[in-house]
Length: 77
Image 1 (cartoon, rainbow, N blue to C red):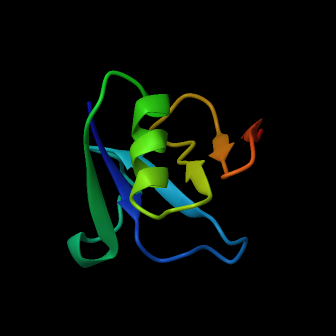
Image 2 (spheres, rainbow, N blue to C red; image 1 turned 60 degrees about the vertical axis):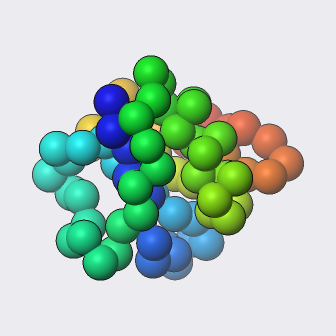
């Protein structure tokens, strides 16, 4: 599955990650292609390597809301 990250930080200080086809996908100039991964965790790791320290998963296109920071992995419901 192809994953993208929103390049504009949200008010909470996180960046939202989406799967291709998401109805809430930001326009092309406001997103960065992370790559094709088997699961969201792999995409989160790539986002972190790309400089997005806190990643929040879009609840519209990915099953569970996961927030990943440089210190821990937290489930956000």
